[in-house]
Image (cartoon, rainbow, N blue to C red; front, side, top):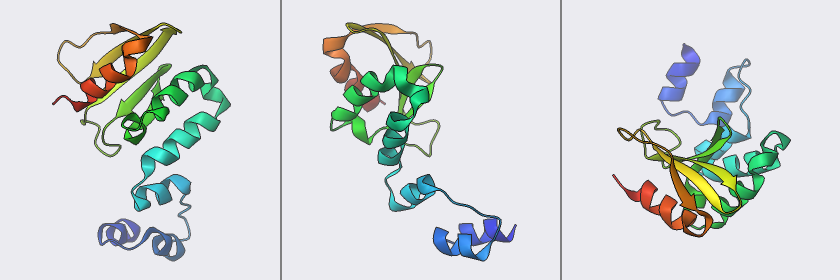
Length: 134
């Protein structure tokens, strides 16, 4: 309880870790504190062999200057892009590569959302628009 209280008071994470021996904070926590969790997460997903099937899609999405700021995860084999990593209700999309020419996209949290087929050439523009809509 003391650790939670100290964290809520805004004690820097490195001091928190020093003060409470049971805490072992990883690189992601540091990325959160620096305000750059997305870049850390992209690197993690692209270095994990578990995500090898999604690497091409991940690289393509990260290459876009807008989408690289979204927080990526892998959910049921699809890439999930989230506007705010710390808010599960923020705008999100799921992207699954059907083949090199076709993707399926779903807006998460939108009433009656369903998978939409999006040609590869339209994918980036479609995702930017979907993540920008309220």
